[in-house]
Image (cartoon, rainbow, N blue to C red; front, side, top):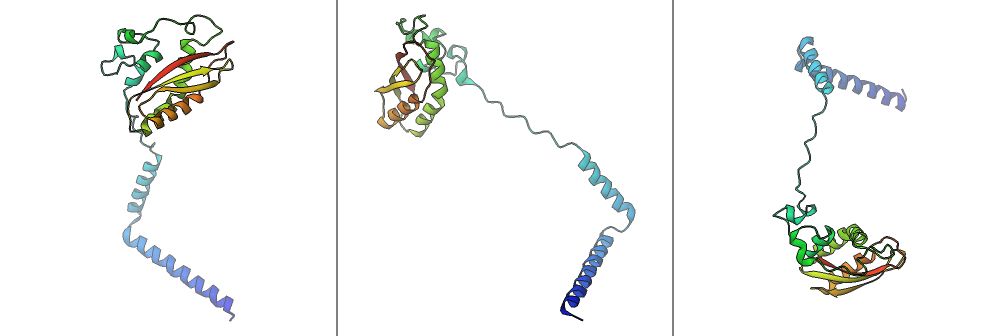
Length: 191
């Protein structure tokens, strides 16, 4: 008998020993066929049932998106008023007289175009505030070209130089509507 034949015989013997051991173990645990069939039917029934529905998502109040005059818990600040086009009685102190920039001239940026562009970069600005331990107002002076790109963003007011630079950098990524002459404006962010 060769070495390969010996290995084959040993493998066959081991397989039969393992198989017979498993059969003995199963026959000891399940003494009769009825018990086995009952257990299999229970398993099949559980597999056929649809999975349980996932829990509903948590309800998060949208206080920040509501207008301050509609929600007593919301803060009425200049930024919220700008984004809500100065609606509500609490925004009256922040409303300024219209300038040439805020007129109905379609050749320059209007308030709605400014609010829309700033809203798109606001998540970046909020990250600046989250990373800073300093709180206060950062006010930027922004100049926009006719193509809608920010030509310059200058920090006019800030409680912290690093926070001001971060907000300034975020504002340079804003894209405004294209106009014939572009425009300039100041914009406050409160942290």
